[in-house]
Image (cartoon, rainbow, N blue to C red; front, top):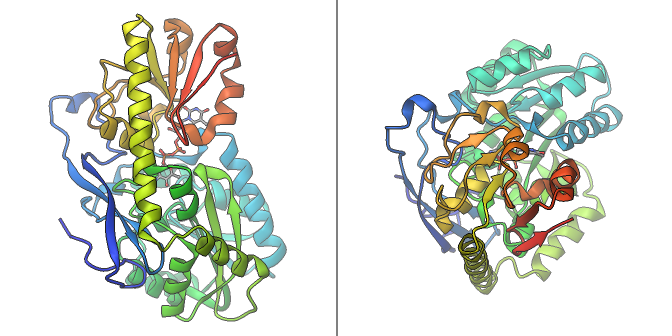
Length: 408
Ligand code: DWN
């Protein structure tokens, strides 16, 4: 297992582990029926902060072919298709000036963003290593270069397809161990006046809203604006604009180009990170204390409800849910099942705590008294979708940013 001796973004040695989460299985390694007798592989999960650039990071233990058989698709919510349609419209309006220019999406998954770009009349190419998910993108008419993105594949793509006017990467940049090699590939592939667009969860909300569960072996990094600036500077790119996004508990979208004046939003957000003390050890120690406080409150609540004979299940089987369940030690003795809409997860067990994942119909059938909402980042969508459950007297427990009970 590789240790992290210097920061993955800025090479600083001023890094420290503020939240050792113990040994965890890979958060998306949902156990197939046929593998129930095979023990899970566990890896240390130590959350580390860089006090120089504010990058939150973990060491990368996952096997190199981990993403070839993948279960996550963004289409499991109604929020994401709308989100990507708006992004495609911004590309059309501001970044792509002619139809022969390419929009490339690294980690294109099921092609949700590129399909929206095609609808806007743009030329698109997806780059993604996951063989099974790439088929979903191709079914949407999106061509996929089915490989990991490295500085080597960047050369191949450029030779075959030419330069990219826009290179997008959404919820993938945080999966990359060799960020420097990735950035070298980006500047190889990017047109001279092209734009590199990074969308990923942000460090500031991760720390201030106690979102410790969004850090797991797949999510090697949670980015501050300062860490993105450091990565860009190394290859001659600078942040010219950025947006704060409410999705996934708080994300950022960064626009990087070789030249151009940064908008005011860039300086304003950099100042916000300083004002929030994102480069001070005390900020992370306070976060770790709050995370332990949530454990105390949540476990006391679950144990009391169980002692009162209440039935409890889970709603949403996100990867982040497995960080929470494994760190807090919540298993099938506490949650009868976890309901999730993503059929790729049905009939599987959650990694580590081995709780069965079922279709949401089971909620109507089994009528659990309480549902622990592990997909808390889709709180509003789930509460409106599950109104009938609430009307029937069911209650939700929301664990992040603080333990809360929601009833009718
Ligand atoms: O970067 C990543 C993020 C974007 O997505 C990946 N590395 C892994 C994945 O993380 P996650 O699994 O924590 O993501 P989500 O999108 O928070 O997962 C939500 C889960 O909840 C999905 O399995 C779908 C499910 N869901 C549901 O059953 N009913 C979601 C909604 C909105 C619903 O109504």
